[in-house]
Length: 192
Image (cartoon, rainbow, N blue to C red; front, side, top):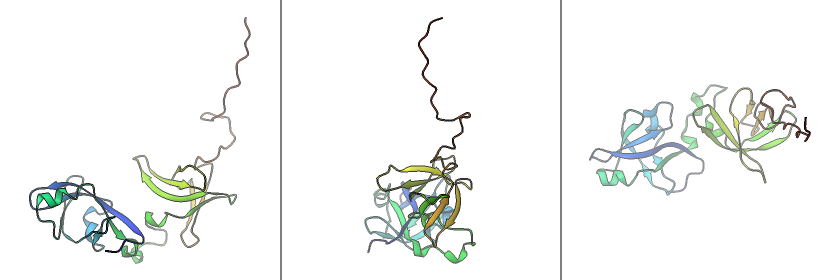
């Protein structure tokens, strides 16, 4: 199996389920049972899996793959990430203002003054909303909120995001109000 050119993570295999080779999978699709709707799933090391059955469980889906027929084979897959090629995702079903998160990776983040703040290298959700990771040459990665206030425009064809640097937390707005980062002046040593 050739390496995928533009892989999209679809799920991660958890523990084995039962004795017949089924596995529990954390699905990253909106409809968790749709994990097998986009063709064979692939691993980073080049293996390919055909989904035969999918059923919902509590917080995961239980999947049966062709060729995984016993608990030992299922246990060997624990922790395996499952990918598809980006081209297998159905663009024609998207509305004009919709996109896949995978399409954001590699876009350059430019503020309203035309300054680049790096490229999107990841999208994360730690529970309080989506975050974009930006990495510029010679800079440490930074996380910005993926919100309407911080990300003003997404231009997939132009390969860039227009961001508000202040709303994104990349620049200070100059106010000295609550929450500002300005230090207090040092206290003078003086007795009473």
